[in-house]
Amino acid sequence: MKISRRAKWILGGLTFLVLGFIYIPLAVVVINSFNPSRTFSWPPTSLSTVWWSKVFANPDVTSSLFTSLKAGLGATVISVVLGSCIAFAVARYKFFAKNTISLLVVLPIALPGIVTGIALNSAFNTLLQPLGIGLGLATVIIGHATFCIVIVYNNLLARLRRIGGTLEEASSDLGASTFQTFAYVTFPMIRSALVAGGLLAFALSFDEIVVTTFTSGASVQTLPQWIFNNLFRPNQAPIVNVVATILLVAFMLPVWLSQRLSGGSAASSRL
Amino acid sequence: MRNAIVLTDLRKNFGEVQAVAGVNLEIADGEFFAMLGPSGSGKTTVLRLIAGFEIPDSGKIEIAGVDVSDTPPFNRDVNTVFQDYALFPHMTVQKNVEYGLRVKGVAKAEREARALKALERVKLIGYENRKPSQLSGGQRQRVALARAIVNEPKVLLLDEPLGALDLKLRHEMQKELKELQGALGITFIFVTHDQEEALTMADRIAVFNDGQIIQIGTPIEIYEKPANEFVAGFVGISNLLHEAASKAILGKTGTFSIRPEKIKIGSAFDRKASGIVTQVQFIGSFTRVDIELSQGDRLTLLKENDGTSESNPVLGSTLNISWDSKYEFLVG
Image 1 (cartoon, helix red, strand yellow):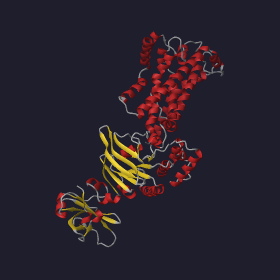
Image 2 (image 1 turned 135 degrees about the vertical axis):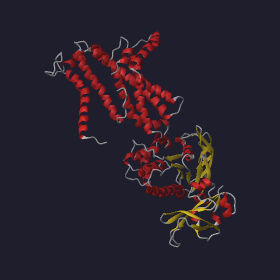
Image 3 (image 1 turned 135 degrees about the horizontal axis):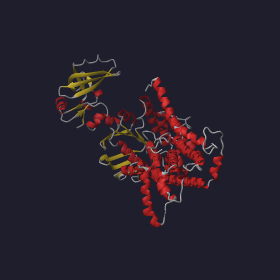
Image 4 (image 1 turned 90 degrees about the vertical axis):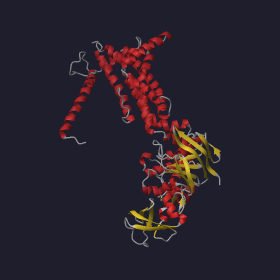
């Protein structure tokens, strides 16, 4: 389609405006994390890493960072294992209520986090509490896994459908056992989709706050929760900027990597 | 001669669809065998049943005298050349060809040597380190062939092997496949919907329709003596004389088939007829003439442009034709 020169300028300007609207505030956060002034006088008169060193000395920040990492890793592992099992079943086999099951697996990503949160909270309280298991890291991981599975499942299902079944048939035809076929043909073909799905799942878990709030209980605090709790305390505000910057990088890196690995096909509604 | 493949009352349904409805077939060792039929006739399903990708509902599959009906594909001594080639995209040409040997635990030096030999056979030396995506369609076809023959299977199955190639390449590969089969001496079974391909390459042909074999025979038998109207129509141009015309011209009852090149202009032969010329197509080495008999049947004849006969017939004129009665066959 041809676009007139004027329309080009207007569209270009709008693009810059929208991108600026998103990224300038992020840049301000990053710059302010190096701004030594407690009141964020703008523009910064000097740059310093004073808040950065304070962050790593803050036990609340480091412990919530580790909680987030553990929750992210746990949710990712569960998602990769279960998500790939379902993806293989749906892509390669015929079974009863296949389409319904496929829909039920994908649905949690479309559910509002607050609904998932309330549902899980009451389920955990009524089912696990009597068994002596309270809300904590484990329940956060389970809560995150409910929607992280979808990311891995969607990524892998798309890949499995794209590569089709003939390569596996060819491998089997050439004398490879089921295990050899998986190791030499299937796995190398799906590896990048698995990694991309896993990275996205991790990123999704790492910045999650709504479901986390309902499933974490009093003893566990993830990094996003810490930020939320400290955002309005003037004393902590400079540190929040630093943590936000860390989160930003921790969040963008896996998404960027997964985009590269899956060739841009890993778009997800929630991200 | 020993049989490479014996199929006994083979049946396979997909839901409500009868894909293979009772197929009996014996294919001799070293034969170049074609399974010919329109799409959906069950020929590809039979091939997949032999390879082991589908499990028959009933019936028996024997390969070299051994019942393999319940054997998984990786334990069957057959290899397949897939229609879309199914080359492993993440491996080089060399690794693709070596694959069958690698999974069977053949030592590295031996499998490299054998892979090179197979690549030499299909004239693809110098491409060992390319990826399949860097090859043309014809080259991929050759890799698929090399990948199959390197395992020295008893039977090679080819699923529409030349379907994706252009006309010129297809003719070239037809010749090469035939030569390759002669040199290797292994049984080739190939599936095709192209009657010309089946006629030119195969030792014997099975014509499929609706999940059943309609006729088995050599190309000449299939072409000259089609078993019924379907075969007559599917293989070559069909000239059918139905009840009225059969009675008037042949003095017989039933439907008869005559091949177009057997019908000559003039009245030199014992069967004589005449009709109105409805179409004249100049094709180069011959001219295709369609005539309509007064009994309603249409006949096509091929007039050779060898300079011995007069000019082409005129559209709408009445033409006298004749043929030798030994070339007419009852088909229904």
